[in-house]
Length: 116
Ligand SMILES: [Zn+2]
Ligand SMILES: [Zn+2]
Image (cartoon, rainbow, N blue to C red; front, side, top):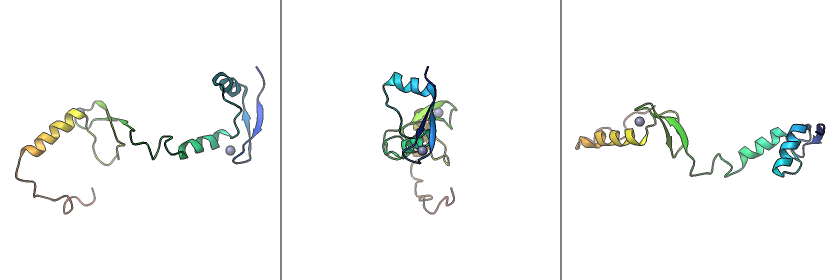
């Protein structure tokens, strides 16, 4: 195996080590020698629209259902401030909720639950 290589990051200008291990890894995948250090590469990745964070609409997240405690996947990112339910629990909650009939005038969401 070849030794480590010292490269200069084209982003932050700092030198970084392209380790023999990484070289092998890059070679295997047919990547060319990196121009940026790991940190900058990671930063770049996170910025990229579509690369994961802000833009993808079809993201899903694994969560624990607040109803039955099972792991489930939801097609949105849970905010953390409200419980997340699996399909089943969500449906059955909806049913109970709507089943009452005729009491929906109570608490039109705005006048209700401010801080929550
Ligand atoms: Zn860098
Ligand atoms: Zn559930």
